[in-house]
Amino acid sequence: MGKVRTSLVKRTARKLLEMYPDIFTTDFEHNKRVVSELIEYKSKKLRNQIAGYITHLVKIRQKALEATEE
Image (tube, rainbow, N blue to C red; front, side, top):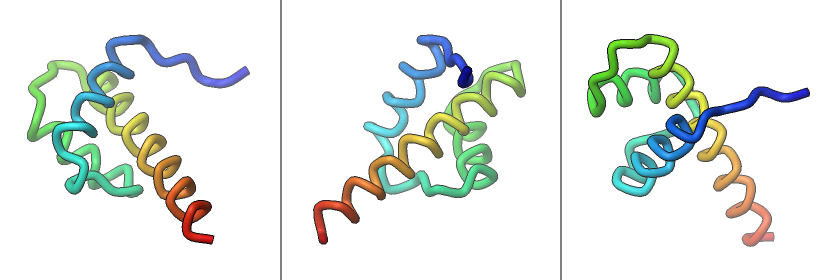
């Protein structure tokens, strides 16, 4: 069974990725720093979950772009 992400994490990650598509990369550590600058959450766990989901979404987009280029 995979990891279950809450709707708060998904909604926030999608919103950030839509607002700042060029800032995020496939590097989790970079995304973690960017998320902490953009959003002020008190919880490290929530910040990491959002950054991890953004990393996941960016990787999916890159694979889709590579597939369309071929």
